[in-house]
Amino acid sequence: MLEKLIAEKILELQKQELSDEIRTILKRNILDSFAGICASLLDTSLIEKFKHYTAFFPDDHGVVAWGTGRKTQLIHAVFMNGILGRRSDLVNTYLSPDHMGGNHPSDNLSLMLTLADWRDLNGEQFLRGTAIAYILSCAFSDYYNPEGGGFDHDAASGVYTALITGHILELTPKELIEVQRMAGAMGLNPNQAGVGVITDWKHCTYASCAMRGVSAAIMARAGLQGPVDIYRGEAGIDRFLPHVSSFMETLPDLNRIVFKRWQALVFCQTAIDTALELHSRFVQLDITRVRHVEVWNYHMAMIQAGTPDSANPMSRAGRTHSLPYCVAAALLWGTIDYNTFSDEAAQTSTLKNIMSKIILHEDPDMTTSYPLKSPCRIVVHSEEGPPLEASLEYPKGDPHTPLSDEDITAKAESYLAYLTDKQTARDIIRRIWSLESEQELRWFLAPLQQEISHGEEAHSDS
Image 1 (cartoon, one colour):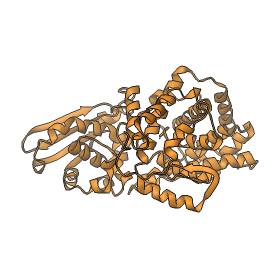
Image 2 (spheres, rainbow, N blue to C red):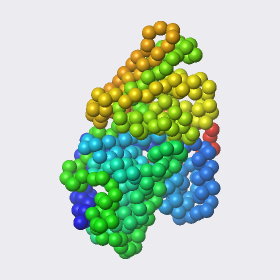
Image 3 (cartoon, helix red, strand yellow):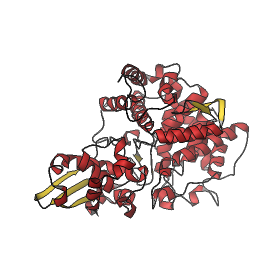
Image 4 (cartoon, rainbow, N blue to C red):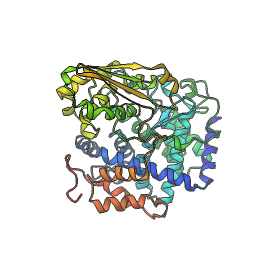
């Protein structure tokens, strides 16, 4: 049975020492993902909703829901904190080399930090748990293609978050088998969040799966059992999700993870960078005399961010997942930040004008080159002169053009500035780079656990 095989793989991973290379990769990912969580805490309207949520489930012995300063029951903290791991859209992305699935490994940082708060983990325990979390999430993407079956790309995360929690709880081999069975029996997320009108539930899909995963792990610890053959049985997961024949015969390459420079869908990153190449020349044009803007892209970018609804996105998530919106914003403003996707920014008449002139094309050669490359070409046609043109094969943050350690540090500093003073921010970052030596993680959690009441202004000491 596959659940037994996967349980055995977990036990093997638990015994392995982390190499220096893996430790460096993990710390880069942790710091980059932490920046994304800090950026999400700019969303004070969402934090207010969380305060109402926590009022239903107060628990003095529970876990803090980030931004609220309030403790709540573990399962609900997992959900709220999981949303904040994705809300800013500064998430990293792993795409399977075999063209199967994909995931955001950075989602796992929210889960791991919440579990660290619950179980009082030290730095080494946290680092090892994060290694297993990243390997599992990427391995499930190598094995499954949920979207090919009409399910959300996070569909399998209910299972691997159960295994991650099972590792933290030090479950027995039998319990690691049962945790998968119960998590799988709780169901798979349909892809309704990712098709048609994109709402902000798109930021909640992993979080909702993690709630079930953590619940399943606790159930297994309590001795409950799930249905046998949850993967390959008559009504098992494999019946619904396209998959390949072997699971984790080769460990996924975490060097393949793409970091984001911009708060938008991974399939919009190259287009944004390409549009930024044109910004200085574009703003010199008379916008009323721009005839149209052609954007050439590969198939996956088109089906993920070039749908008919992308021309008129109605939510923050819809805007971060819209090629026309991202290209127009980059051409017009010369940067992408949190405010780019606000309701106020979306109502800008000039932005709407530019969006109306964007024409999306799929380029067959670009499609063939994906996923080794994620190219984009933009051509601006104006009555004022010859076309403006730029093209790129990779976004900044792709393994071919990676963010440096200094880039990641600066990214984290910029978003921590909204939560704490400059010196504290630098101290937190320094300690993340030497995480294995830390005996406790209260310093790591502190910026997230405070009650957030700021607007768009940075900390006064920054």
